[in-house]
Image (tube, rainbow, N blue to C red; front, top):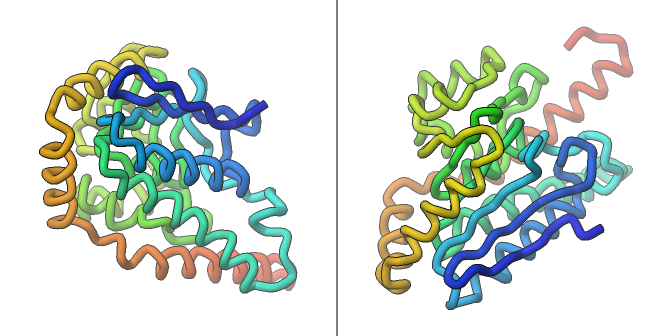
Length: 248
């Protein structure tokens, strides 16, 4: 089964990510496939808006910590290159010229939430939640998620989400600026499509130039590589400590 499908509805495209289990966690194959989808659609001048969604039960449980493609390397440099592809994924979605919307039903956790933050808007169904457990697990938020989170929610709320491992319900996410619209359970995609069609009614060139101008004022993702490298180093340190019996 293909993990990624692309459906074109006039000037709107829907990208569905369904790994067929594993809580839609992002393994290396999924990261590459979602990156390829973003690059493919970015070249399609007929598409003015793109909706990214997962399954009706889960958007994504985040990075797959058991994927040998990401972690099964004896060479730390190979692991670093693999992890950096997640950073490439989020940059590909954030830099798409079209308006992008994440339609979230079910949990969006860790790297899955960071991918959603890379989109322009987020629509949460009533069964959705956002959770960023990285710091509590001993790793900083990577893939450009830290500046995007702080930019949307503000520094104090970003720290609250990260340091207390909060599970943000849709109402809280909306209040914090991490959601832009809410929908009934199972209706996030429908609501996102309505917004996408509204945006797609704008002349394409004006939409793209305006999006690029706004993003240029707030883009802090140039530090994304440092966060990804810190994520890797902290992960390696936690493994070494567990092997030696030293408390984390």
